[in-house]
View 1 (cartoon, one colour):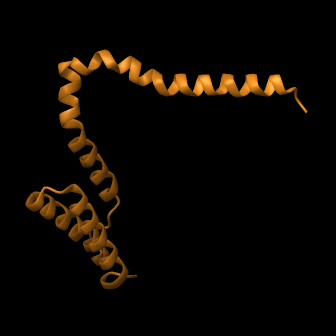
View 2 (spheres, rainbow, N blue to C red):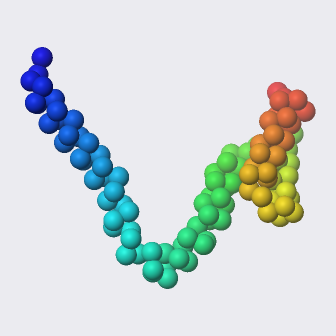
Length: 109
């Protein structure tokens, strides 16, 4: 069994490294908050990330098969609800529910 002082030192070093690694990004990015580029990216990136996720999710969709309609209908519901209500939580939950219901019942293999 290792010495108690050794264990305390190991835990202290691990805690210091963990804290430092978690604090480093905040300390490094603090001066960039006033940057116009960072402000531009923070306003545009959420839409860009969502577009990348949509393309990734739909890239292998077999359009010739009827089961491809479930994700497409769910996507249309999600977009329509978001444009109508401007509530991301509502549109994502409703789109997910529509997809699960359609994929489980109407277009089940």
